[in-house]
Image 1 (cartoon, rainbow, N blue to C red):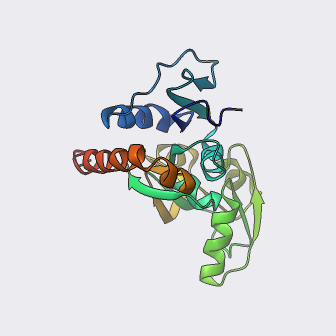
Image 2 (image 1 turned 90 degrees about the vertical axis):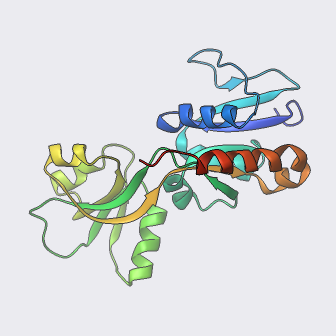
Length: 212
């Protein structure tokens, strides 16, 4: 159990948003612990700030349920999670998009969609009055379009180079995503003196990011 052992618990995702999130928090004046090695999942000493290193999609869960006070995660993950967290700052890093992708030969109606984002995809279908079977996959989603497992896929796209190499088409951008700073709603009240100034500094720094 880690509750009560640290002044603040920060959840950061492994992968592309970890370094950016860590850097943004340090630049905003938060004294984060040094990282203790690749195999460590919890960094920090009791009485100070702790960093939890989590799988990307687990960050909103840890923050929503109060194990972590704050976190950094992509908006694509937030859209899928449905978790009730406060989202005060768009950090502006880790830009990508959630897109509808098809094989060029798949020109018929979309009856089956493969994705790592089933909740988000179902919401898009409802909003458009469309009906299609959704297949949740954990691995390479693009393969579903290449093999004919699905008529289309919904997945994250950054540069589009992977799709081009696979011979797939990005048909439509469904949502844009950047890294977000999220806060547990109870922690925002209980640790207001620490979190409010941190949020303001993160906002100021995000606004000063150079245009991409």
